[in-house]
Structures are given as structure tokens and as C-alpha cells.
Length: 330
Image (cartoon, rainbow, N blue to C red; front, side, top):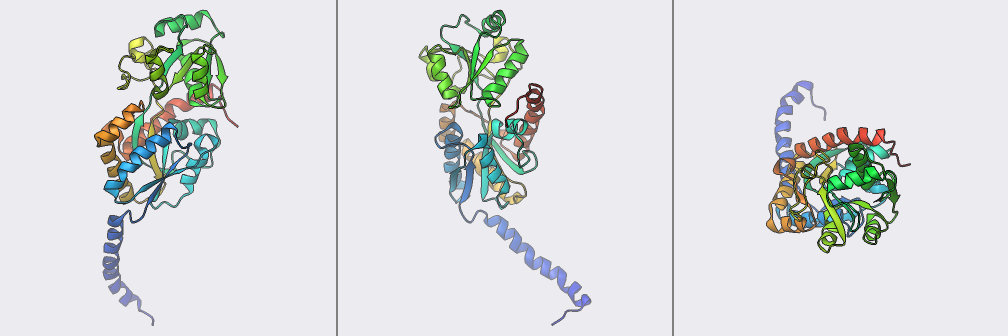
């Protein structure tokens, strides 16, 4: 049977009206099945732990479980790449960090774009590192530490996870800000082993996450000088900020956020964002995250626009620093 053009034009409005409620209802029904949250790091690590805490609490407002999938390798690039290639239907998400969604873009040739391959959903937390040293280093505050480094150029050692890692980039930034020089000691097994060596007095400095540093600071096993943030940490309020310690503006945080593949439905992004906001408002969730040394993202960062603004600002700040230092990972 054929339909004349005049007949088709008469039918078109009613057909569109018939289909529109179905599309709306489908959006309102989201999600109708479990959601996968890709963690581009190993099970049991800080990012994995944060993801599991938040994902478990998201189940209530979503009415569906959020299942963790650890996809490791290439400094998180493999897991993030898998998320970038996933169907943009709101059922595959990715948790990322400053390292995976800022740093990697400057040190790797990625098969995806950090700025155009994803839909931001919300920032979760921030994790500003602490500046710490071996306990017998002859400096009792940050000013004395910088003076000691200047008096001993190229003699001090800082542990890193290797070229292009967070600790390495932060060390380069510190040298640039303080006009100091020291050696980088790479640890293939990560900065956990570097911390052990520092406790043993075999290296001098580290830029460490609070979860690793605070117990050792309170045990008197290492020294702490400042937190690389404009605000003191809730888990360690006795540690001054870099502004208070005499190095204003030396800010860095390996923050966490959640993204979806580019093209995910706006209704799904909105529903996911509301679930994350709800989770981060839960006192039990907040308590667990603070115990890990995390700072809960301010409410204006718990939005797609807030996360996008943060990521773009960090790329604008850090990519020139990294490229000027010639840091590249093949």
C-alpha cells in the first residue's frame, strides 16, 4: 500500500505525537538494568575503594546495582579507553582521576580525547598530597626544607612511581616553584615501596597521599611539612597548608570524578548525577571517604559543568608544565 504525500503530511504530526511519549517514558525508566562502572586501576587501591563506596550507595536512588569492573594497564589508559569505546547509553561509566583524565593526555599518545570522548557527570573527591620526608632530615618546616635543598643541590632524593607519574610531575613542579634540584628515584612497584625506603632512611622526600602518610606521621616515623592545598585536611588538621607554610599556590590534587562515553543521553546523565549527589550527602559515605584521606568535592563541583570546568582548568595549568619539562612516556 502506498501513501500519498498529502496523506503522509497529515499523518506526520499525529505519528510524532504518538512516538514522543514513548521516548520520554524510556528516558524516565532509566536505568532498567545494572550499570557498569569501569575502574582503570587495580582492585583494593584508593580509586577502587572510592568507587565501591560510592557505587554501593548509588544503588538506592537508581534502583539498580552499579557493578565495578577493574580494567588495568598503561597507567589507566586501557580502562579509560574501554569506557570511551562503550555504547553511549548510560550503562557504562568510568571513574577517573587527575592522573587518568589530565596527566595521561600530556605524557601518552592516547587513542581517545580526554576532552571530547566523554560526558562529565560529577566530581567525587579530592586528594591533595602531603610533602613528607625521612624523620632525621635536618629540616623542621617547609622553609627549612627548601633552604636545605638549595644548600645541597642534586644530592637529595625523591621517590616516584616512574617518569610521568603523579609524584614525578609534582616533584618537577616543586623544583620549578622553589628553584631547587634533587634526584628522582623511580619505583616500578609504586610509591608504597618508596614510602618504606623513606621510613628506612634510604630516600629523602615523597609527595604522598594522606592515607599512606598520616599513620606514619602520627607514629613519628616520618616528617610532614605541608599539604598541597589551600585548605587543611580533615583527616590531618595539624598539617599546615602550603600557603601557611610559605609556598603559596603550590596546589595539586589527584581528584576523582565519574564520566560516561560521549553521547550518553542527557536524562541518564542527570539521573546518575542525582544519584552521586545523594551518595556524597550520606554521612556514612562521607565518613568512609574522609577516613581514606579524601576531601568531599564542594557541591558546585558535583555537577557535569563543575567537573568539566575543573578538568579543563587542570589541563590548561598542567600540560604546559609537563611539556616544558620534557616529560614523556613511550
